[in-house]
Image 1 (tube, helix red, strand yellow):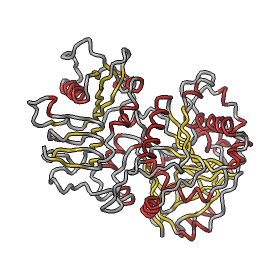
Image 2: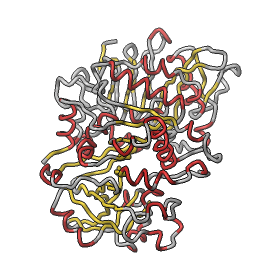
Image 3: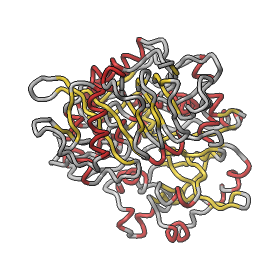
Image 4: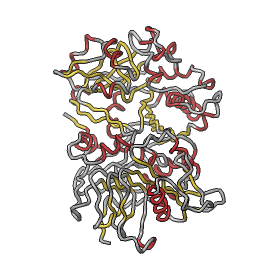
Length: 525
């Protein structure tokens, strides 16, 4: 039996991509530049796995938006269709037909995990430690490449599509995997995972052919015919379409994650879609997959499952590869991130990916997740906090369910400050910016971890730009302490929002200031 941990170890010993090209979508040109700088830095730093043998292409959705009928957002589906055309324009008409391509969608605004809106969730660091002398970084990108490697060998030419903010942990019998037929270039093959009802109603669900269902309980990997694909169905719809599968004494559904589009499906079908007339978002899950199956849901006249791609995809050869010992884990929201990344001693993700212990030998009270940061030995970091790319070496800090990212506080900033207590249940992250007059500064942004950031807070210009990282952190803490009443701040101070900061970010400085040689360091003050 081979596990996710085994795949990480294999990648650790011999990091190879398995793909002819890895395409990463970005939100706009600024984010494209940030992604490319990080990839270059990873290739140059021997603490990373990425080498020159990995062939990356970062593509900005922004350039495609300008080619449409005025839609402001393409959605992952619109982005996918434009990227297919872009690959042919750049590399020739036969490129997709002759290559294995991994497409990672990473171009969103990250409003539900805002501290990664600058550098991208795909480049977030995970506290993986395969052995005690492990000195490598592990990013979400590395984990994605390691865990998808078995499927690169199974697919014919075409494109494997995945998101940047999920991880699928799984185990499989190697002989069963080897016995699978290669995915045909005229087919679509989707990975399926047993999930409970709570997950099923927020994801895509595959309704499988009854005749193949027994294989789920007898094999670790099994290929299935599919009747329908439901997208974010209600419990009543799950029952109506017969989506529940009995696993021992438990009922679950088979939910989606990543999938393979054969090169013939792309060239002969999807490239015929009039993407330049796009006037609304397309989803590469709902709109691409709902037309599939031997009895697709579009036959039932339910507008919820209608797709503009119905005619192009309705009769495609379609299979679902079920990984019966797998679990889909989404890391796209603050709540999900906090849950999986903190107090994780008994959680499946941490066990499967070998997260290092949260107990630090230098301190009995630093129990949080500390990633690439310097922490004063007298600090108190609780188990429900994450400190990433921060420098608090001079002054002890006290956390209480906090996410702290890219923050610095040195004693010279405020000599009267002996200890810094962070407000309970808050995210704080600092961003270097260059404002209109060319002056460099810093902006620290913050919000309650339970905030709904797609509300007013996302676009409110209330966070002051200061000369240094330290001053911006203290100014924002003062703002929070006053319940976001900023009357004490000068009216001449430039203020930014979580939305607008991305337009002024100094991407080069963000990448350069990261602490590449630190994993977790506790220092005497």
